[in-house]
Image (cartoon, rainbow, N blue to C red; front, side, top):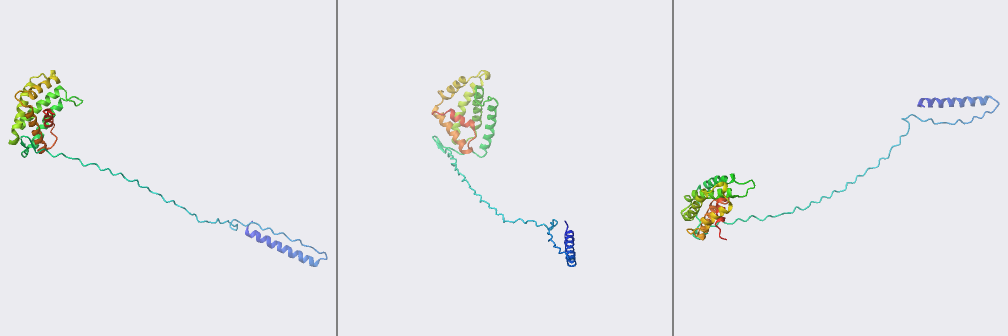
Length: 235
């Protein structure tokens, strides 16, 4: 019911009470007016009491995040130790190379290494053919080096050059397709290690002096020179 209808009903009830009271005064019969129950009609939605929710303060507790930083292990790698180049061997001090020698040696050695790599098997291991090619490449490199070393090393390189020149003659005469590792080993033993014209100790010393000369002046990276020193090693 609307607010206007409620007010009209109240006026109507009040008028009715007044009329009945007037009638009771004029009539001889007492009229007892029963009280009219008042019914409170609900008002519209605007009058209805809307319960107001009690707003309680919402407390948000943020648990502190504990951050654990794991210690980073520190690994100290040992510094690489470099072996100082040999500066003196029996036979005298190791001389220095002339300017430009190392660059020319790298080119010449690289070309000879390529010749060996062309005949290497797929597994990279030396077979009889590639071993023969390596021995011939060593002969050619010694011939190139012979006239390019300082005077203090010419006797050593000259000895190595003569031995490999004789060995190379035999290697050139071998049938490449028929060469075997025992045959190559026999040639090396005969012309290098068991030759009556060559002292094995002297040959070993000359090979080590040449290797020390290259290592001191040019550094590592010349496998033909290094393998030659190993070939003549007596120990």
